[in-house]
Length: 157
Image (cartoon, rainbow, N blue to C red):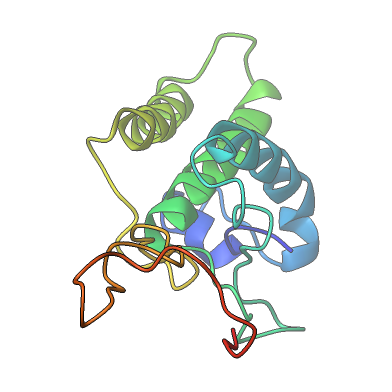
């Protein structure tokens, strides 16, 4: 139940020297990315963040697909982890491209948190209006025009 696919992460990799070949290879990167992204966005989307999932071979059409922006953030984290992993074998110095991927992901999370960006394509997020209570001022006695503020035995809800 990953937020992004390995194909999403590969968009940010060079496709020649560094590429994620399979879902299995992507699992550790996806798991780490998911933990960070779900944790960062839980305060904003507590009811749905744990339901989101990216398409996979096992489930090509998930019930609650990950919104595009969240998928992009998770893919950036995955690509960062892969890139940093490959280059850590060659050098102990941080790789500038991996750092840029991480910085971009963190910036997108911050923009979601501060309201600069919004999730426009989440099917599980709905606008909630004012709660409806009964009785209220809309229900009036037609003879006296006084609000009806009591229940009767005949009323069904």
